[in-house]
Amino acid sequence: MKAKVPPWWQLPSLIAGGIGLLGVLGTWAVSYATYAELPKKVEKVAEKNEQQDTAIDKLTALQEFYAQQQAPNQSYHKQPIREQDMQDIWWCCDDASYRECWDNRTWYKCP
Image 1 (tube, rainbow, N blue to C red):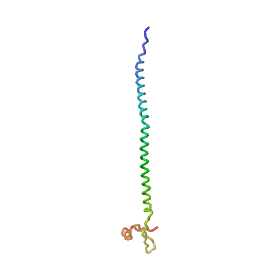
Image 2 (cartoon, helix red, strand yellow):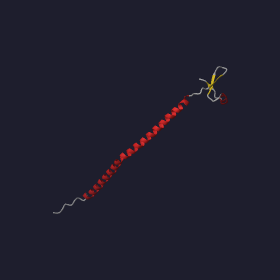
Image 3 (spheres, rainbow, N blue to C red):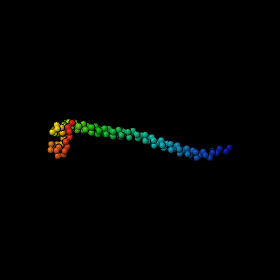
Image 4 (cartoon, rainbow, N blue to C red):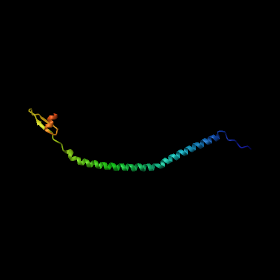
């Protein structure tokens, strides 16, 4: 009795199936390698975040320090120079001196 001959398409389909299986295994290997490196990447990002948090804390402390240093200076409000004319209207000027108010003509009606 003669052995049965396989159909002509069986050998190419087995080769194509093997190549497809190798492709799937290669994809799985690359995906797993990426997934395996993920904890290291997360650790690096967490470390960088901690460094940035530390830097932000230092900058915030400096900002608060300088805000406290400047607060007394900012609370001082210079009173404008006041002048009353003949019609009893009060005029104000924010320049440094009375002479500058007249030279620069920066008078305005006082509120």
